[in-house]
Length: 164
Image (spheres, rainbow, N blue to C red):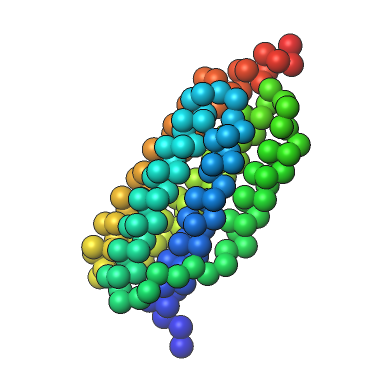
């Protein structure tokens, strides 16, 4: 019979895979962004992602597991949509708005995963793991807020202005 512990471990492998894939995608997004603030945000998130992977590795250690990923079709699909935006809007003034939207789709997926994993860890009595996962959750929320601000103050207005 599968347990909550099994589900927790599967979820950890899923988000570990996702974070590794995100780490690969962020440099492309940073290089493609037109606005300097967007480039900086993507580079900052890459640094944060490296730290998040480190925290996940600590969680694996806490539960006596070797860090490993499990293919995650959800993040693969979200990243594929981001690649489509990169290609279809490459020379468009709307590119940054699209990249930010794609990044926020990633953030929202991560927030859902980390929120669930932190709750499960707490319910399983894995308080240190819950704290590590919650730290990442809070970081993801801040990144999402930063992306919203970039979209509303820079990328979206620039895209609208170019249409005018």
